[in-house]
Length: 291
Image (cartoon, rainbow, N blue to C red; front, side, top):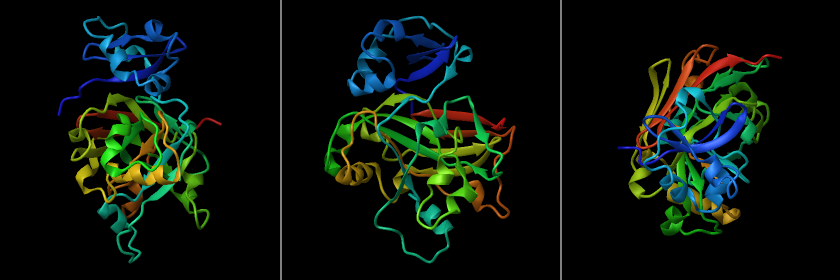
């Protein structure tokens, strides 16, 4: 599946910018649209993704990809919601004897817990148990409450990828939450870019693969998700109003490092790649936090 269009947030020479990514480089559109849209979040909120992308047509790149630092595409979403345990094999990994759930597990992450494509994930000194989770991300483009399943795709503006990095021992510090282990600064990544959502085929049966140092650790298809994208939008919007720019991370397949015997944690020098057909590859190294 070809990637139809890519629009990214990035930093160059100390300034935050955005533009369209082509095979030749990045067409910077910040100056042209900056008076209207500070960043991609404002582009999404205005429903202007297609307008901005169209403005890059026929233009020569402003920068080579190697010259920029990618940022997370949506800098300050009102809500950044994560769906847990959303593939049957992942549910079976828990070996708790419980039947497949009828409602999704959910938790919240903070934007600061993510970094951009090409940046290093940061392992804190408090734990060596930094793990990876490759996931598909949907970005809301149209507000709604109690959105019907059949209308759910009308509310999605764009797709991107996530490595929903986790400090495993810290998710077990308390009985009823995982917040502590999911929100360490720069332990996860989102990106590299936004792909406009135009057609159901972009979501309903696409392959998701996570590699560590070139070794495939996770591989599945979104058609196997226990709670599909339509259900997720419907369910979440039942209890809260979804607004443009909201980010929903939709669940990871089996194969995270915690499930190996013994567990295989990420360490400095590792490279993690999350690849999804039709969206791209999110790639990050790993480093230790400098305190």
